[in-house]
Length: 511
Image (cartoon, rainbow, N blue to C red):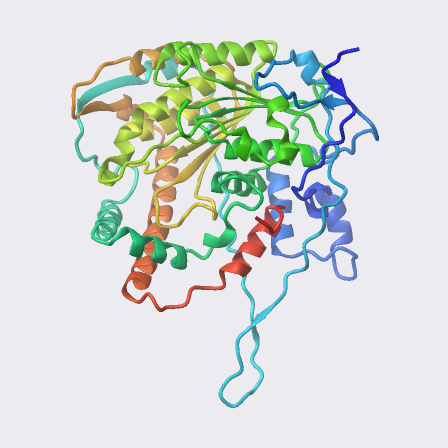
């Protein structure tokens, strides 16, 4: 009876999940041994371990085929978007593409013949196994104690004690390597970066930008888009919020992935209304963002998350759209150009990270997940933000996905299962966010360092991850410099790395 509904088959070019993704581990083990019909390789084994580790994912409920003919929201020809009620959202349905094809099996790449033309063993390219190791918070959830640990310190931006969250020798080595890049021309740097990065040609797949593929990589590791629970009220609609995500790579991926599985999805987003605004014209047409995504720009229409009134307005819209329940996933991919100030990138992003965390706490439901982009985690402020997340979620993982360029400091914090929605800490964080600072001043601390030092397990985890990622970054910069010094050097087989990555992440091998 609703004129906004019509029978419209929605096809997605995102590859449907493979057998190893949707088949329960027990079934794979029974059929994957010697003589079995399902050959297990290292990637399938890795997927099994992830499924066993994440007890929330229920393969028997995931990826259920939809009924043959279900109405979906039509894409309006008008430029305005009407936000449907949650009851309307729950009636959405998607039909996965019947044209998706299975990628060819991994082929072997052989070296050329030796001088005597003898046959050599093939050189097989394999993707490195990424270390997905969570740290779980074993402390009981005590909001009062968490708030008592807050301690704001405002002052001049100074160099932190790098031994607190990393190793000073490694950090100074990393800073030295970064400084060595400053005198390289933009053209030489770009060419060397492209050649030195094995994953450079992974590119965008079918999406608008590289951000979508980064989220695809994280999704393959953590199962971010998996349905965790059955809720008759929401009818398994996957709800998400995209913070600072313009022009929309994360949203484009989430819509494409869920629609390719024939599952229901709806999202809200807030980003600066400028050249990096959500750009529906760049979305793949099959995702139909006009019908399944609502961009918001706050009270003043700017989308500026630095303003409290815009955060509260966005949270109000999301809560109303979810009947006060909150979304299943919040992604925060905010950042800006720090050219010429790379050494202070971590400090410059303090306020943006804080505002994204506040917005997440106001929109994420209990047991929901959070993906936050950060760069270095060396200062007490950033370490304090991670500590706050660690205490409010069941577990947390710091990781740099393969699709993130290895020579930069970008990394992601994956937070699983929010312990309580709308925690009381929100109001305290708002107070910190509003503190005015003088030029060359910043909030240097947000948590009492003595409180953090009481948890040696947390400190050891942060130090270990920082050292691991920093060492890899140093090696990547050294490799980049080799291509600067010798532009004629041939890169690795980037096309094969691309094929393997897209296959592992269930993405089409096409632009």
